[in-house]
Image (cartoon, rainbow, N blue to C red):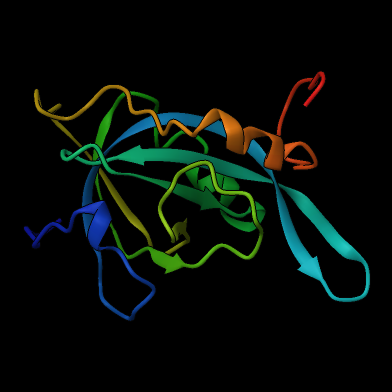
Length: 152
């Protein structure tokens, strides 16, 4: 992979720019691919892969691999490893669920390039987005929250 100018996660927008980022994979899970349907509400189309990525400044973004590209990415990215990733798509999420505060999310597809690189000492190993306790009650009907909620 040729050396390209690296962008910070905070600069990612849904433009036609060819983004290249250097990130650590903080978290990985298999999640459902859901879309909003005008006629039937939420529609699930199978399971894809979800990631939380962090850059050297501590900025995080949600990344997703749809079911159609799942097999080519399943063993490509591992938690706590650092990668240079290019040729991805950046979109505004369709649903209200966002595991990070970033206004956009990243989609990896068949054209996405992934190169594992040596770990940077300055790359954060953890990142947290805290919310105010009084805003938690607003989330009581959020279908994406796991676990049980009592007396909210």
